[in-house]
Amino acid sequence: MDSTGTVECDRHGAQVETFVCQHILQSLRDHHRTGFCWSVEDSKARPDAWCLECDRHRDATGGDWTEENEKFAGITLICGACYDEVAIEWVLIACSLTSA
Image 1 (tube, rainbow, N blue to C red):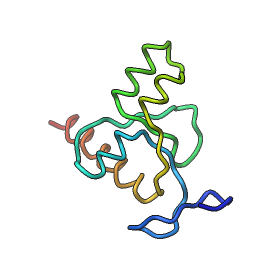
Image 2: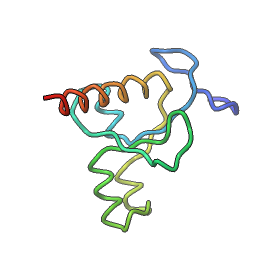
Image 3: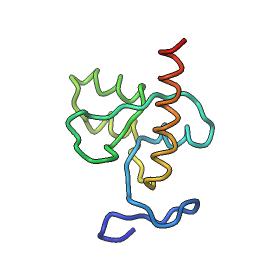
């Protein structure tokens, strides 16, 4: 990774850096339905994201990130293309659930 906010991905090459919880990263591998949450106050094109279980941990502390729930989340750096893959998967799941 360099100071311009990019990361070298094994699958996608040089990409913009993004941050997700370890559970979302794992869902890229096993396609387990984890959920995909982010702050509406985050104005980045790819806001930091976390799963529903991490969101429950955060809600239990009044909606704040604490040392304990940050440890549970295990925020991880991934490339923008990987982020887009998992975000699109969640959008498609949400659309299929609402149209059923």
